[in-house]
Image 1 (cartoon, rainbow, N blue to C red):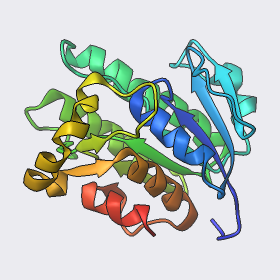
Image 2 (image 1 turned 45 degrees about the horizontal axis):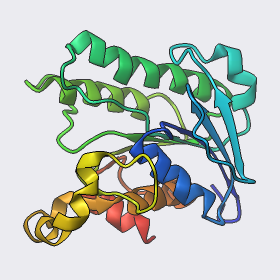
Image 3 (image 1 turned 180 degrees about the vertical axis):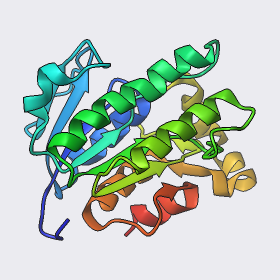
Length: 224
């Protein structure tokens, strides 16, 4: 993307913590011109830059494909916990939904940057013992090899939430009080939600020399 080109981003998962945080950074960043969010339920956010599509079938985006044309970035932040789920159920939510949207977007916007929120310790070999890591690895590999101009897998670990946002998970609310301890013992495993959002924006603007971004890469790209 040329330096003077404005970002027109599609964001998923904005009714969750990470997606909401990424949307917040995009709406407040002068390099982002338009934001389209796709949700099953409204995010309740109103902003001059923001458009929202309420779409109930996340395994098939053909009904809204015309509305997805003309965007040059996708920040895919939709996800779920693997706790209590069998591999086929977790695969359907994690891999199949991501694939459905990516397959649609690459047909109409092959020059876009696709950023996928994954997680630390994801298994790129797809053969390890940990179920969620295998499924995330399969999803990463699919996206990175699909044919977008740029594609990145973001692997955050401990995330510092953005204050004031409504979808912060209860666990992370307590993190503010534990932050000094967390930073002391896990300095290489912690980044902020703000840094994730800025890193995604900067990846669309200027790219990065790695396709899989660990925490240190996210921090570096956030200040690029």
